[in-house]
Image (tube, rainbow over the protein chains, first blue to last red):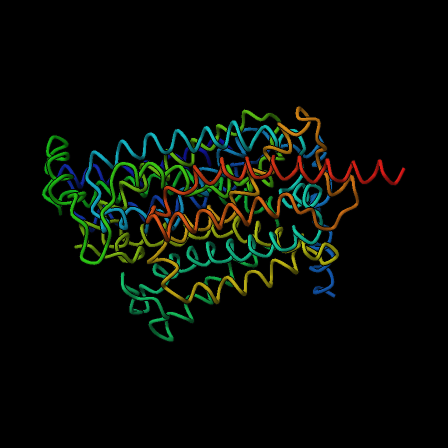
Length: 55
Length: 464
């Protein structure tokens, strides 16, 4: 379960940074880049609190 | 009943305000890396980057100034603040009380607490610029000093209330929230910076340096703003957290560190927040035609994620700052529970946040705030390292039962007076006063300690 949460969090971080590079390289539009970043934020904050700083 | 439970829970939070942190409560390095990364990748970074653009820094001066200034800041945390914090494990305020006496430290705590309130206020204001976006609230601009609308005031109060409640819950909650948000926030800064580059005409990374010099950090200040050089940037990067490292405020945080070397974890904060984030926010400002309001400029490049980042960035810095302000004021009223003090501090902070001047003159405010608190950091440093070698007493006020020890008071007030005179008479910029000020404070404290402690021992011998 923890691994699944961590993988989802990692996906959230990837969705935060990769779309900006794709937009910079003109592969996607600004709107798509912004939606993907929002999806990344949701994934990160929905999963990271359940495994970060937990012993 | 439930209200009583909440109060009982808040009363049970023990932050070791007047005793050393016990070994069982020490924290590992990860806690500090997360704390520093979160705290220094803050809402204010969205303002400082644009203010460098407004002050006409050139691209080369900015990058080299930030590298050298940040290295000096990390060194100050690691070699000046952390060794003392990890040795005595007490808050700055309790340590100062033992050196200076209760009455002097009450004055210091009041000044310190007010400075922290204003600093946290600027961060609440930054968060409010993002919260106000969906409500179409008019954002303050570079020249605004007073509240711009009722909507602005309501937004600031909403943000301030949430931040205060979290700060009341103590360091654990603050640290945990900062840890969770930090990795995501720094990526949003980088992503927003990248996404703004095409608007400035950067089509490939090879174009960046030319565009940086011609359109972002042009070397030409905006009308009415002073020109910044490499030296301004370096000293600002070094001293923007002067109160925390050289001023020793981070003793309150680093006293939880297992080893003094955890002071180097501040590098995570300054090189992400005070380098990457300042560059990114400068790019965002240039892409938004020089606009300063953090919420809208982040929103334009990163959409909702950018706006959320501004809110959280302000939040993660305002939280520990309000926490520190609560500790400072509690030093004056030790019998009052910290959470009650934090509640009042949060209210004062929120009122201050309504004034955009805190944000628009942030560079000057940050420099003044560090300078005002710095001499007492010099006093602690000398008291800890040098006084025993000079055969003078450490923690003199505690040992002699004094409520007011004149030596640190003289060092503090005389240093600030000299700095003020250097600024007014010789026109030395506020950003450059911290370094000579520290050496002056050291000399004045050693000199006055020698004089007063010897006088005291002579009178004691006469009595005997």
